[in-house]
Length: 496
Ligand SMILES: [Zn+2]
Image (tube, rainbow, N blue to C red; front, side, top):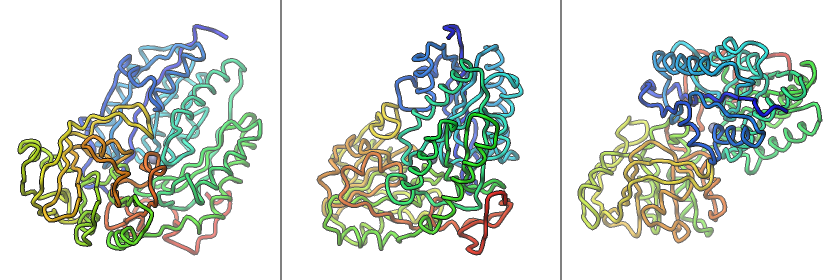
């Protein structure tokens, strides 16, 4: 054991929905350089946990460069090239290091570079050389390429969706670097890719949970360091879109490859259980109003900012109002204009608003409403479930009550984000446990904050950029037929 070991920590994190209209620019990223990254220490994030693990191991963490933003459209080429150049330059300045940990997502797409993570990991590998241990933690919504696997000595994807364990996987990735140095060994990493588009599937119950547990059983083999099940990100038109099994193991690549194939076969055999289903907004509201298990939580999965949607869609809110839902709250709809209008008017005033659906018509039409301004908030919150302890800024929040409704509240936010926990409601004085219906925009992350209080959860899937109706998206770049778009596919290990 050396107390002088240094592990560099860096990352560029983006989940790219290539079907978004606008490109993502440099100014959209939240960038932290060097020591600033230590602000994340103590939070349940990948970089925060990597710093903490270094300290526990008596290793000096060397924070280099970190950039992250909300899921959104393809990253502009100059934005990526600028961040990558800065990361590599900052890393070069701290060399030599004993290892490098990368904080990544897996579904990053740059204009002209379909695989951000492969490109970045390869560049880091070239800079530090073959001998330096290089590992990474990922989001399970990544799409994997051979370049990613070839560049890395260890791949650690979160096991859970909601991603409540990102910090634990980052700790393992740092631990592996230390083990490699202590024991002088080199792991093998192998990928087995499946020709399937998996809908957003929670790991808290159902087939997602069953598969998660199967992967953990495979990890019981002492030769196996990690079994990573990348569900994949279907809202990406890239050659390597799909689900992927990546295994990091001791020894030559045979054990890793065999386990990856066993894991992939298991996922493939259960695929019918993963087939996406959908309720329209109207169907979801009718089901919620007929339920006796209050509070009923309705999640509008198709307008999930966490998958690149705008968050200003009005389909579900309109359905709630049209159905005359009472004692209901919706948190939240992203509309900075309306939030500013309410903040200007002040608490206790009544204003006419044109709410939401300002990005495009796919996500609905604006709601023309006369609303009472019940409460206002600056939108700065601390996450309490997933990524617990990290700061989040929803921008100005406004709690609006539509005239003529029966105890219905609409929370309006100013910055794109999904709802992760009850904080955006609490911020404006709403106790969701007292409501019959609690509506929000998220696919599964909200479960970390709502599953323990919801009587029932109903998923609404009106039109939107993150719909379960994945057949609506054109696929010009996928290299092979994909289930469930093509039900006739016969696949076996070795085919991909
Ligand atoms: Zn994810």
